[in-house]
Length: 149
Image (cartoon, rainbow, N blue to C red; front, side, top):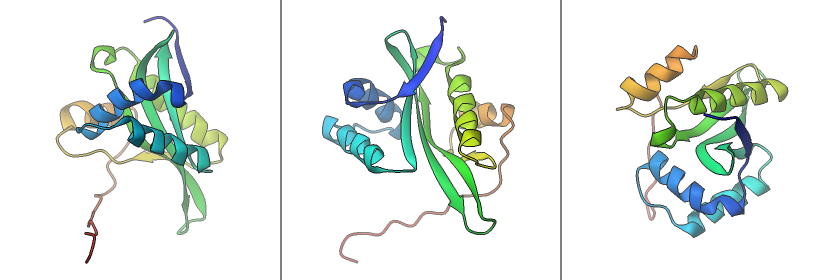
C-alpha cells in the first residue's frame, strides 16, 4: 500500500459510499439514502463521515460521533460505523481509520472511544478491536417502534 489519506466524505463520493454502506449494513442502499446521510452530517455538530483513500481510490469508511455522558460529565468519541473494502483488508486501512478516530476524539476533549459491533463478527472485527485495546463492556438492547403502535 502506498500512502493512505483520510478525508471527509462529500457528495462527490456517493458511488463509493453506496458500496461501503451496503457492505456495512448488509442490504442495498440508494443514492438518495446516501445523500440523506450526507445532509444529516452537514447539519450535525456531532456527526461526521471520513474516507480512507490511497490516491483517488476509496478503501474504507469511518462514521464518527461525539457522545456526551451525563453520568460522569464527559465525552466519548463513538465509532458509529467502520468498514473496509474486502480487497483492502489486512493492509492497514482499518488500523488507520481507528487511529484517526482516537486522535480526533482526543482533539475533541473526549476521554476515550467506543463502538458497537454486531454478533457473527467475532473472528474478524471483534478480534481486531480487542487487538487495538478495546474491551467488551456490555450488550446493546434494541426495541424497534413499529409505526401505528
